[in-house]
Figure 1 (tube, rainbow, N blue to C red):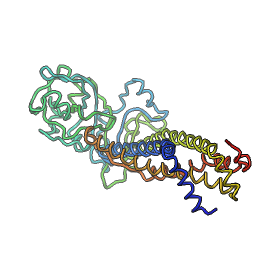
Figure 2: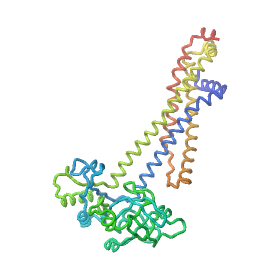
Figure 3: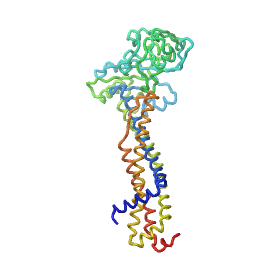
Figure 4: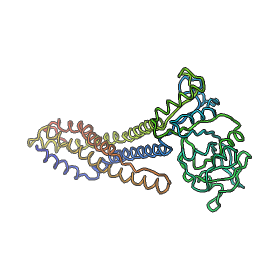
Length: 415
């Protein structure tokens, strides 16, 4: 029997029971669409996260107190609430003396309540220098950033995030020049950030308050050490070289001769991007694996329906064998029917997935206000179509073999 004839016969059999064919394909359609949607969401989220990290600056190096390995101060110790005071002003000065460094910006952080009149909000505040805004790519949209003289004199000025500005002052009141209180210390609002979002260390920049380092250290936190130092590498130098110079300077200042006893950790943007890329890729694969379970369920459903079809068409099988059809001809027809069902379901699933991905993109960008990236990965389409075709073969072989092995005499007698 020719493949063309077997294909025509299979199509005729499937169209004879349209509703059954549609319901049989439904599991594959839903499975393929789920795989595409989840892989698309995973890839879009990955691109969004990586673009936000890259937006901070690709030539930044983050120096934080506490060793990353078996050092004097390990990262687990800091995570348990142990205060690490190893990063101080002389370290930042040592960084600035390096020719390969264009800026060294110390930072300290805290949480408190900010009050304006009868309005208040719980916020994160950050004490830093005037170079913070340029290094972190955080322009001030309204008003002006504080200056070096503000930092040196300990001026009570602050820059606030755009969402916090609306929370405290509403839509119509201009925040610039207004006075707020943080821990009973008064601050004049000098400006409002042009953009919010999530910055490094997961800081919510929408509700962030940025103030001179001296004020945050002495009057709000009562400390002399730094939470971290952000180093901007000169574009003329390789980032790895700058990292090595910073490491050398810190070990020299802290009297460290054994690298295993470092009391600091240095991370570059490339390190962060690599870690985030690995995590988001694993999460995307995990989501795809979960969605693939529905493909297996759909394949089992197809095998079940095909087994029922073999039983219902026993007399037809016996009649075809009586007029000369071989076991291979019968197996071939039922296998083609199974592949047609799964492949058609795969194509419909891909189209449905594309529509759902577009709806998710429109919904997130329109109603969520997120700079979502439209991603329709070709790998998901190929995976969906490939898995659907393989499912048709894998789950169709057993029913097809059962049909091909039927004895023609017994099949003709079947009622």
